[in-house]
Length: 145
Image (cartoon, rainbow, N blue to C red; front, side, top):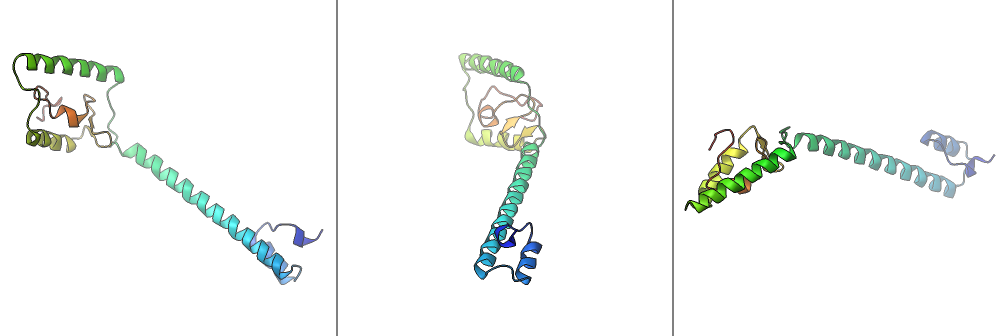
């Protein structure tokens, strides 16, 4: 079988074929391009695999390993929050606080060990803190504000 018609298994085979002068210059060039393309594909696949592994690690650690309450518990907390805020407004209290006070509360949350940074949620109650910190009747579930 003519080696010029069979693709090389490795760069070593290509070098051996070149050294033995069994290949024309155009065949050498074609096979070199094939080898380069294979190597490029291999490098891209390795880079993609590494990027996917890094993303998986980031996904696992980006939430500071703060687990959230169950969906059922978060639904219960939301219902209680709606009732509490409605009762407060009916009693004549304001629904919201100032932006400055809300930002101060949110700053406390962002420094808390229960704060889920990626979702901006509290790991104790599951609330979206950008909303909860603005509501006058709300309190921190661990008493930080």
